[in-house]
Image (cartoon, rainbow, N blue to C red):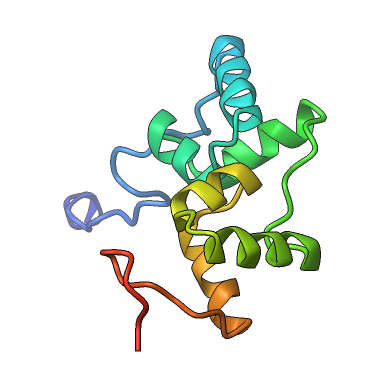
Length: 125
């Protein structure tokens, strides 16, 4: 009878290879994360760079008292982006200056029905 019980597969309570508790970020990594975020690097890129989930990165920024950038552009920022884009600046440059990804800038410009250029700088149809 004991043999039958021991050959029964045991259910695992966690994924094989997963640690029992989350890894802690060292103080040097946290200070690098804070520095990089302050320089304008988005949380999702920090997550990739340091190999930690974006929620972990965000939690450490919160604990350090870092005020986070808004996730969407304000009306004033959109107005600025429209003017800069009309003046010939790239989506990438506008996004970096305002602290947003170029795709966010593109989305907001499209919502404002701004006249768009193709990748060669020509007006799109």
